[in-house]
Image (tube, rainbow, N blue to C red; front, side, top):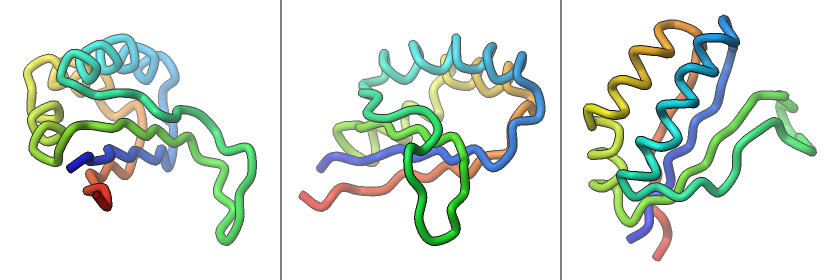
Length: 96
């Protein structure tokens, strides 16, 4: 069952650290089986109306997404981020 990795950036503290993270994270997550579906600021908001950067990545399963997160390559990306952003990251199973 497809799973979705959803990251919401609550606060970007250091743009340089975020850029370093992105250079490493994108290739690491794609190599682990992820497909980027959306990345950026919202075009339209409702309800709370937060203008927060959001990233959505599809994986074949929750386990594949977990393994991507726990991989050494993604660990290097997290080390580069080093407090450069405050995020909410969740892995959500698809409906089918």
